[in-house]
Length: 179
Image 1 (cartoon, rainbow, N blue to C red):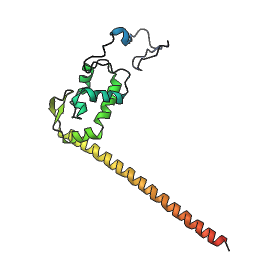
Image 2: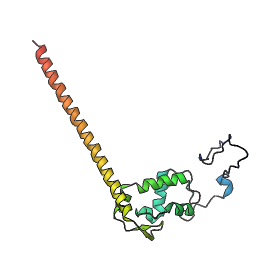
Image 3: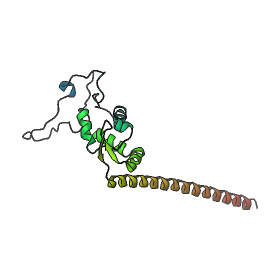
């Protein structure tokens, strides 16, 4: 049976490193902890090897703050790492970026008064600057989408004009070539 390299770039060993400087590399996850039973508590499921979208889907299933698209408390990443110790930080950041950049989250943030922890418990207030930032992000997206649609319409109109021009040229060419 082939063995697969499951090291992330941060865990890989630099063979050219100076041997005088100690390099800490984590041991294989299988050697550190026994496998958790399938009926483990929410959040205890291993999140290793997940893509950002798969992790986000898991977070939405397990935590009300993600499921209901509530404004997340500052430091939510630390709460996630505490509840899901095997979580890859890069994947977690990517999943949080997808979630907090979604239209649904930005709309919720624009109107929000308070932030929430993973369980949905009310936390700190949302500063006006954060609401304004969400509003600006939404406006930029709407403008970008409107500009894209306008460019598509303009391109389609130009294509139609070129087609009509070619038809007229063909009609003129066929008219004068008969003589």
